[in-house]
Image (cartoon, rainbow, N blue to C red; front, side):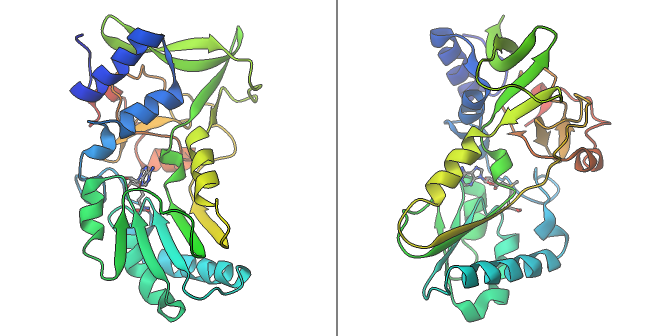
Length: 283
Ligand SMILES: C[S@@+](CC[C@H](N)C(=O)[O-])C[C@H]1O[C@@H](n2cnc3c(N)ncnc32)[C@H](O)[C@@H]1O
């Protein structure tokens, strides 16, 4: 079948829609980001002029110093376990770990970095004393899990208020292109904002990361707003490419680079209001 978007992953999605009908948005994200040919297979995902992400650790090392204080507090609350493991999930290019580890030297943690992107793992491999993984380790020793700007990358469902009542956004296929298909919702009421996301991927990640008998704690940092902006062009779900945002309302013609978490303020800084690029032009 002839479909728009990057070849293999677009075909995977189109085949599944052909077989089963329009798919929920979290399934679409799962395939777009993580299936063969998906976004995270395509290094580099990271900082720098050609990267998609610039985050607080890239702005100033004081961010890592503040996180080190929070990690000390959690370590204390866990009962100061000896030989605990510090696991950074979604560690990106390692900027945060590089600044953080000297601050925590006296706690002497074993350190792991978990990354789905092969390009990011190559960058992380240059940090001394860090075990690099592509999936979360099984629960064993006491562990403190750090996730900075990861959870809002994980798949979510989208519920929208419409004149006909609440609807869930699905992705269908029309004339070889992906389109939004609105299906009735029975699960939840939406708020008075025009769209609500249900972070199914983040929920599963947290449950699995904290499973296990040993003391485990998680420090997860993301950025967002507890109120929608009320403007469909700047509200929560969007695609990001080379630090340029695309409005979520545009049909999801390209299964690339979806994320859920930016505040309207941050969106403006990243040019979302100015940008009118179609997601079909994102990487
Ligand atoms: C927005 S970046 C943040 C990177 C870094 N934490 C920082 O603050 O600069 C999100 C990172 O999470 C990684 N990622 C996405 N899904 C993941 C998953 N399921 N497990 C591990 N890493 C993941 C991506 O490859 C990307 O490097």
